[in-house]
Length: 357
Image (cartoon, rainbow, N blue to C red; front, side, top):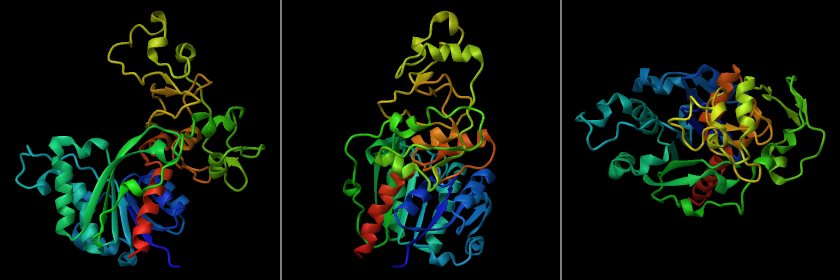
C-alpha cells in the first residue's frame, strides 16, 4: 500500500515528522530557518527533501519550485506562529500584521498543495486567547478553503510520553469529516522518568558513544533502543561547584525553596515553582525546555541537568534519532520539538479517517 506523504513546515529537528513516520507515513520534506535543525532533520530522514528557508522571504510563485513533485504531498504539518490574531488588532487585515506573516505563508502551501489533511501545533493558550478570537479566525480561514476543522489541547503524558507537556492541535480535513480527538488512543497510567532514563544512570562521563549491555526491561525502553543499543548525544557535564551544592539540597520533586538561604540568597526573587526543580523518578518529567544552562530542572539522582539524550528520551525521541550541531543547539532542538509519540497518536487518528474515505 502506498504511504501517505507528509510535508513538515517549521519542522525543527523533526519531532512531529518522527511521530508520523512511526505511524507509517513517508516524510516528503521539511522546511525550517535554523540550519542545525535542518541538518538534523535531513540526517534522520535521509530520503526527504530538507530545506533551510525563511518562509517570510518567499512568494506564491516560489512554492512549487522549492520541492520536487510537491503536488504528491498528502498532509501538511507544522507549528506556525499565530500571535497576531486579536480582536484588538490595529491592522485592518490580519494578513498585514508582521506577527502573522509566517502563518499565512504556511497557508499558502495549503492553498497551492490542497492536501488531504493539515495539522497545526501551537501553545495551548491559542484556543482561549482573546475570548477565542484566534481559534475562530483559524477555523474561518480553513473553512473558506473547504476544510472541516477541529482542535483540542492534548497532554503528552496521556500518549506514552514521560513528560507533562500540553499543546494545542488543529486538524483540518478536506473530506468534510470533523476530526475526533476523543478517538485517539490513550495509554493507561504513565511512563516515569526512571523508565525513560534509568538505564542510563550508570554510564560514566567522558565518552562520546555508549553501549547498553543489559536488555530493555519495559515496552518504553524497547521502543527507545536502536538496533545495537548505542547511545549518542550523551555528553555528561556538571555545573560549577556552588551550583552543585544548591542542587544537592533539593529532593526529588522539590524546587528552589528547598535550598538554604545562605546558598541562594541573591536569586530567590521572581522564582517560579519549576526553578531548580529536581525530577521525580517515579513521576513524569516537567516540560523539557530549550536551555543547557537553565536552572529549571535537574537529574533525579545527580547534581546536573539531563544530557541531550536524557532530555530526548523524556521527549520520546528514540535512540536511533541523532541530533547534530553544538550542544547548545541540540538542547534547543529537543526542547522546541513536539514529542514524537504524541504526534504519532494524532497521525494514527488521521490515517484512520483517510483510510475510511
